[in-house]
Amino acid sequence: MTKGQTIAGDVAALLRARNPILWVVSREEARVEALLFEASKAAGYLPYTWDIAQGACDLAGKPVPIGDPDPGAMLAAIRERSQNGNERNLWILRDIAPLLSGPVGIVNQRALRNLARLRPTMARDRAQAVVVLTPSADIPAELAGHATLVDVALPDREEIAAILDTAVENNAEALPELRSSMLNGTRDACIDAAVGLSEEEAASCYGKSLVQLRRIDPLLVAKEKKRVIARERVLEWYDPLPGGLGSVGGLENLKSWLVARKAAYSAKARAYGLPAPRGALLVGVPGCGKSLTAKAIATAWGVPLLRLDLGGLKSKYVGESEGNLRKAFRTIEAVGRCVVWLDEIEKALAGATQGAADGGVSSDALGAILSWMQERTSEAFVIATANDVSALPPELLRKGRWDELWFVDLPTQPERESILQATLATHGRKEVKLDVRGVALECTDFTGAEIAALVPDAMYAAFADGEREINTIDLLDAAKTVSPLAKTAADKVNGLRAWAKGRARPASAALVETTAKTSGVDL
Image 1 (cartoon, rainbow, N blue to C red):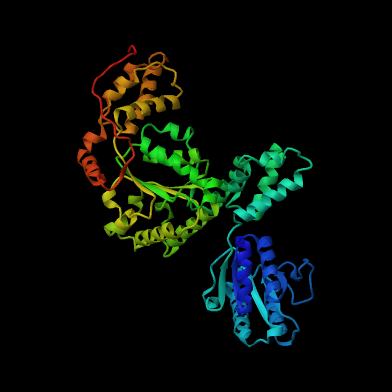
Image 2 (image 1 turned 45 degrees about the vertical axis):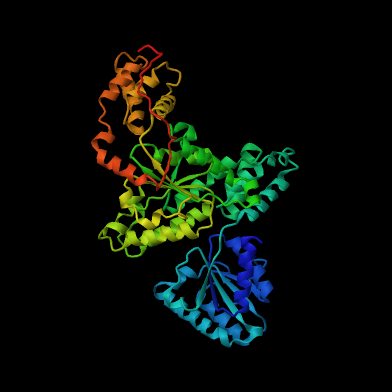
């Protein structure tokens, strides 16, 4: 059973139970009205729609002489039919929500409340039910005791699949190879790419892809989600890191684990009953690849990357911070499969553990995050990073919130070489002959960020010296100017290592450091 069918069944049950007002939340007017028509038929009601432009209309959209476009007159007409009519009706009011505020709205509110109070006394064969169809879940306080909130979810995978199949069948004659292009996992990829879009948006994206490419491309469809994120203004869309996990030097344990988790999103994994990965918390030394890894996961998995800035959601107005956070969670649920990045989470939640004078906003945010992480059903993978583990609340660290807790330490010798090679490739210097191993040996106790910074520093020096190519001496000279964080903040680094023993899984493979400096490349 699809989400839409479930919602139609729930609405039918509410109508049979004689609920006076249903406050239905959705921006998909056409899809929701089809579900409401289905529910009204099951409950034995004849549905009508009403809006401020056309007034009352029947199932076919033809205006009928009942009431008029004025909301007060329409509510009065519904009341009259409850007393003197000869049929049970469901009234789907499209535009009334904005007309329930302000001086005029007070009159409409009272008319709607009177109608709700009258509902239990209506004869069954003249029962009149009202649906307020609106994108907003904010029910006026005066109606809260009468209205039942029905939050209509966006189409699920099964419904999106039906939209895709319809698009394919409607264009199969003009594009003979379209059906065969849906094989080898492409159909599943196209469905996954559209999860989080409305029915109309999904159909439009499939149609746009067919017009532009004469096939349905999941990457083109997925780009539409960027517009959804921008519209909600509670999350930041990040372009995935080019190169994916290959751009991250070292951290082999963590990268192997991430590669294995990707398989859990396949159709075979769903058929097997394998749960989708929930997330990971990366704790460790600043500048050692935690944030870089978060950006690389989205590339490796082929999903959108969303950054949830908890600090940016805070507001000076009471209740608005919590509302922004709930809106962000709803957006994540709507987007479907994605990577959600919480960077330096300990700073955003500092008030929850350190008694910051923020009116309890941080504590409320922590509670909301913990509840969402425990109860969520979406396929979003949450990756959080933290530098100061002492500032993290204990309840955030317990097993069950995350699939795994990782400790990211200073890079080992092989990892330092890998970081240098990855950075050289990023800057277009992959083919340049350099003594990478020798440079890495001189960078003991350097963080990954400090090692990566050597390459652009060397390029500046080489460019200033006659625009020549960089060499090993340029890298070694750049390394001599660095004061490693591991030495300037040795107590902090040692404290992190002491905490991680027995608590977190090491992100790097256990390797024995070598101190022998050998070089096979001329300086």
